[in-house]
Amino acid sequence: MRFHVNRDVFSEAVSFVVKLLPQRNPQPILAGVLIEASDAGLSLAAFDYEASARTVIEATVDDPGTILVHGRLLSEIASRLPNAPIQVEVDDDGGIVLTCGSARFTLASMPVAEYPAIPEVSGESGVVPGEDFATAIAQVAFAASRDDVTPVLTGVQLEVSGTQLSLVATDRYRVALREIPWDGGGTASDESTAALVPARTLTEVGKTFAHGGDLSISFSGSGDREIIAFSAGNRTVTSLLIKGNFPPVRRLFPEQTEHHAVVNTADFVEAVRRVALVLDRSAPLRFTFTSDSVSMDASGTEQARASESVDATLSGDDVTLGLNPQYLIESLSAVRSEFVRITFTSSENANKLSPVLITPQTSVDKAGADSFKYLLQPNLLLR
Image 1 (cartoon, rainbow, N blue to C red):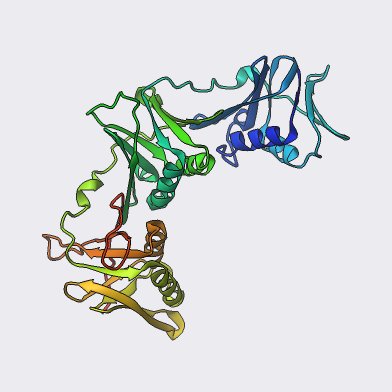
Image 2 (image 1 turned 60 degrees about the vertical axis):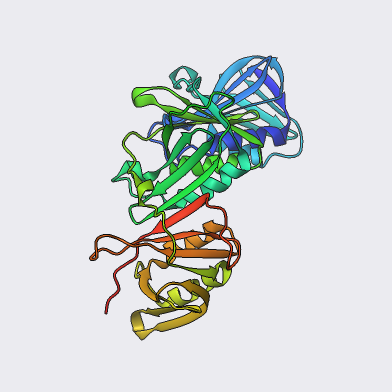
């Protein structure tokens, strides 16, 4: 096997396929990158049974063949090579020789026969704008749980219904929802399709395809091997879906939103960050909403105290409640509008705190798009 390839193109391709691989893999064979050289060009792929990445690039192939080489080492080498074409070949001893200018590396070859088959996807698919999808992921994925004890909460639920794709995530204390247009290519069905994708994988997908134009999303497989694929240009990422029933959190979003406050987003974020500095970790921050302002008060260790207020417009009665400052800051950063509306919902249970609904607001008087919603459960405040 022998091929020649552009250094920058090759380095970018290797970096892409190894991105989804875990830092420490229990099976050494899964640390490899599979490289196939043929008349069609150079195919690079990585797979760890949970997720896979594949790309095809142009190369001059003198002798077709397939090799398996340690991915992260190859990526580090490729990123530091001099500005010259790369030649890769297999020597008489079975080693992989990489030459670039005066630089020469000999790498051990891993057994191709032991590498698992990369999953193929051939199911129903649709198209979404890559930039919109990446933005939606950034607005939702942070709300997924990081606790593996409940796997279904570590994922982001993708739901296709008609011409709309929804992304939903929750960790029991908050819920994030974002909706974007979905093009089913004339095959739109009244039946909804759902896929629970690991948040970590989806976050990498968002970074990878943010500027790649339209993104194709395909659903495939059955039973314990249901997968989803994301493709744009010459790149494809697949992910094994999380098994289990995602909680029906949509019903938690209220329909009536009369009791609310409107605040400048940037001013609010900065004030929360400052006041929260004196708080113990995970302690709630006290918020008091009045007709013309929202004030924040915090008491921490070492008798430290802090307070601050920012302008706000309140519709309804004054409200005092406690909120996790980090969760609030993450939601405010995800709103991506100059102003934010904080709606105080009501509950039939008088002994239960009702969540607050956070949505974009174009101006003090004009609501923003309703495609993003965030629910945050208040905390009990000590008297």
